Length: 320
Image 1 (cartoon, rainbow, N blue to C red):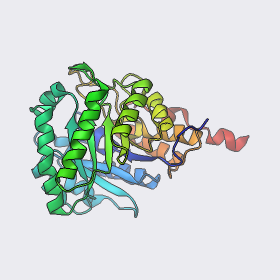
Image 2: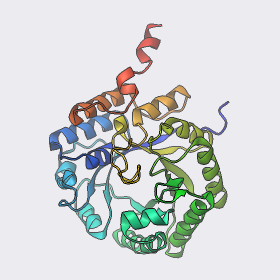
Image 3: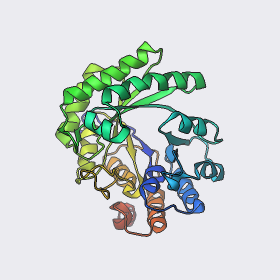
């Protein structure tokens, strides 16, 4: 049964930023340009290219401006960047080729907020008013709010879904109070605690509280439930997911502070899932698999994607 599955799903690719940022060493600019261009060539419509952060703390992203300058852009592709403070935002604004989108950030877990941003979840929410004003001053429309630790936290444990709903309602209200409209709430399973039942429950509760706001998901495959969680979300009608080619990236807090946790859901694997279910993505899967294999060659070790090693079923079906 199709249930409420969407007819079309959008994948927002984060591998070039999230994947390379978490690596312990910088990688050649030309290699990263080649990967971004291969991803764009597969039909992905949104690619997060780099982050504008302190180059002394994150040398892997020190050349963000040069990376954007080197990319041969494809029409219809959104080439995005990430910033964490006003200095980073102004760097992004000054960089030709960055497609700016107004993203807000809120924490459901207070402990995670204090560990990650040195402030409480309530303080982080209050700071978003300044971000709304900055985006308005710059003429950058709000795109979404990401709710970190929507399903669980490695410092607090289980997250009551009512807290996630309350955080979603609070940030949507903040946007309205400051003259903005929030098109999307992205529920982030930051440290891989979600399961299909939790996915269905939280999506249903947030949708009931904010029926006019679209819901997206940022999922990790930390404990192997990434595909099951995507399927549960698809059955709930969710049509937008953050993902990383070849499963690049991860969260250094996912195992109580230990690095090395599995990364985001794998883009090509989830595109394959959608295609097998008859859901369109606008993506050429074989080209995307080629981009995943390129990522593995650049990184220089075996990556977590399944399809890039097993191949799709296209050749089998063509021969049948």
